[in-house]
Amino acid sequence: MNPQRWRRSSGLLARPLRRRAIALGTAGALALAGMVLGLRLAGSYPADVARWQPGADDRGASSSAPVSAPPTRLRIASIAVDTPLEDLDLDAAGALRAPTDFSHAGWYAKGNRPGDIGPAVLAGHVDSKRGPAVFYRLNELRPGASVEVMRGESWVTFRVLTTRRYPKDKFPTDEVYAPTPNAQLRLITCGGAFDRSSGHYRDNIVVYAVLVA
Amino acid sequence: MIASSVPRRLVGVTFAALAAVGLCLAQPTPAAAAGGGYVRLAHLVPDTIACDMYIQLHSVTGDVVKFLPSIKYGTMSDYVMVPAGTYAVAMRLPGAAASSPPALSTSLTVVDGRAYTVARMGPPEHADARVIEDDRTLPAGGTAKLRVVQAAQRTLDVSVVDGPLIAKDIAFTTATGYQRVEPGLRTLRVQPAGGQPISVQASVTAGSIYSLLVLQTADGRLTAAVLADAKREGPVPQGGVNTGAGGSVRDTRPGPIVALFGLLLVTVGGLAAASARRRQLRPR
Image (cartoon, rainbow over all chains, first blue to last red; front, side, top):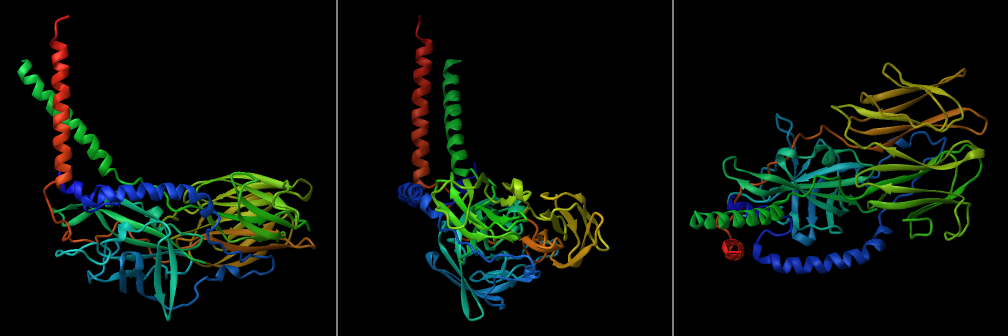
């Protein structure tokens, strides 16, 4: 077994193994607290009550976006991310290009704008050849964490739903990019084992977040 | 013979133990849908009775997750996002206490990533609470999906003008399957059996999913509207993203804890194998 596997693929939580013991203890306590709080939290999901009535026949065109400006900045206080956003496009094969600057995140500009109904996609590097990059700590994000995107003059706030890791060769396109009934965000970086022969990580980390109403 | 079999066992036991631990540690997160499911509420019974609608945890006496007061015919709420689990949808007369027995109710199991419409549905004299599952799976290559939710007391056909038939002979209280529709500005034609057709225009986006809700007015005319069940914009990216260059992978040797753990397993495994061997060799 490739020893690097132990380091990078040993679960979402721990990159440095030394932190694992502490992390496990904390996670246990948090899980217990979460179980107790779970029922309460169920009642606090965001919800809009904008309703359709017969006769109001053009509601299909409505959008929940407070502003129409494209996103320019991303802020995730809990993992010390504060970055401008590059525009990202697809490559010739249809795959999402990564940002050119390792210290910047990027926004898939042909897709949804963050805050509009649908899954808006942001991506950033986990590391460069020299060390950690903008999304190095993305896999630490846990449900409830706040993610903010600047559009025009105002910040649009999202709440993390879940953090997942997928092998790139089994990337669940239908889950990550499927249409959504509300405004959501996908934050994507790399994870898992680093494959020196290809120069790429084997997995992707995907953080799912939803607009805070 | 005996001398060689002990180390072989030892290697086997150790390898199996290490492999088991490795599997536990390296197990990827299952590629499940994520973050909860979606529920919306609707009143699709053509009568004048309004009702208070509730989504409650586990049962009609459970905690209220969502409350929509005084819902009338033709109303479809926005989706409420809820954690996967079991819920009840209760419908009560306006103003009735949330603790009172509901006039109508149904239970609802919400699966992660799936969407549901729970409606008061049926003819006025036999209204019922019904769960309709909504599709939110990615439409195939650059198309959209559309279905009909038929809440008018007629039988009708729905088609896209210069496009496909969505469904024929759609009876009152039916939700049809979803059909592929080309994106763009589309005109939907609703043709009731033995009556005047109506048409509705809708701007259809590739990758999005729609319901055409057909209703009737107080004087019996048909009316219809296109609602977006789920939306997305732009071409769908293919596969994963290469967002790393490996510069944070610092150490290529096993860390001290892994090494210690391995040593411990080897020792325990060795002792176990040796003692098993001894027991086996003991004369009976």
